[in-house]
Length: 139
Image 1 (cartoon, rainbow, N blue to C red):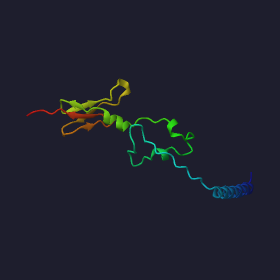
Image 2 (cartoon, one colour):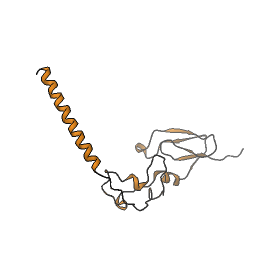
Image 3 (cartoon, helix red, strand yellow):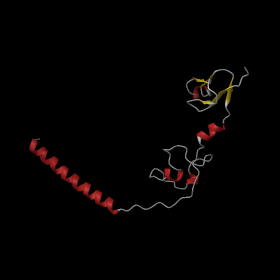
Image 4 (tube, rainbow, N blue to C red):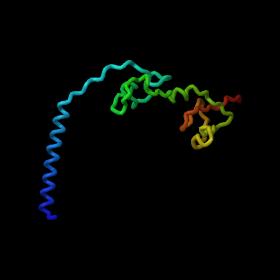
């Protein structure tokens, strides 16, 4: 195939692409978006009423894209908020200066870590969020 024949084909393809892009952009401009109907206010999770992160969108807005065909929020799964479940866990009192956490459950846990408890107050595990505190002692 000669170079001139190849360049003619490329010019022809480029003109076809321009025509396609013009027609798709003009048809996209003709469509007007339909505003979503206001949905009833739903809790973010069954046990947590609002968002807990700045990057998290409210439940009614978060599930409004094309990925979610089921729009009835009561029929969609609503898992419990992990943050609230961890807050319901009691603080584990340790009689030493360091706590050891492996997530429990054997192979279903996480790597073993050691948590320094020298400062007063509860200290959370970085993996699972369980809280540990040093037992008060008399001097």
